[in-house]
Length: 113
Figure 1 (spheres, helix red, strand yellow):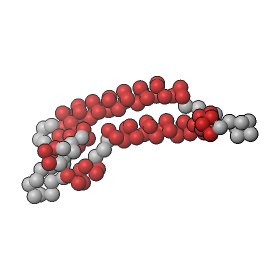
Figure 2 (spheres, rainbow, N blue to C red; figure 1 turned 60 degrees about the vertical axis):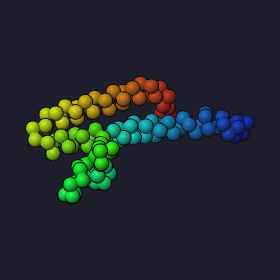
Figure 3 (cartoon, one colour; figure 1 turned 90 degrees about the vertical axis):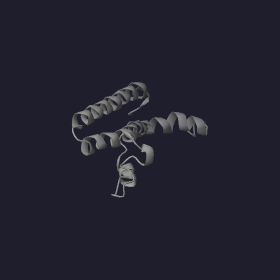
Figure 4 (cartoon, rainbow, N blue to C red; figure 1 turned 180 degrees about the horizontal axis):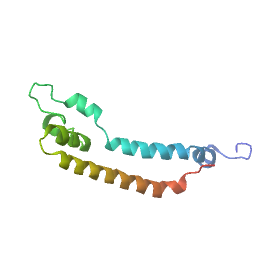
């Protein structure tokens, strides 16, 4: 492309970007799903260690996410397993919907050749 007289912007836009779009598309989908499933750092850093300072989710539940909420309802509350399963299903439907939207919007821009 450089021999044909293309500048840096044209090389980036017409040569390099089409080559990395499959990887970028995969990372977009994987990171979107991973963002909704953040659990481990929140649970490890904010769980109740027996000192009576509150459970996972931090003080005043400032770090309470959907996955921590599901965990608390499933393991820490009596008779809330069905509720936790319903919230987990709702989380799944949100992630599925966002993934389908991303596939429809961005799959036309991904070049596999």
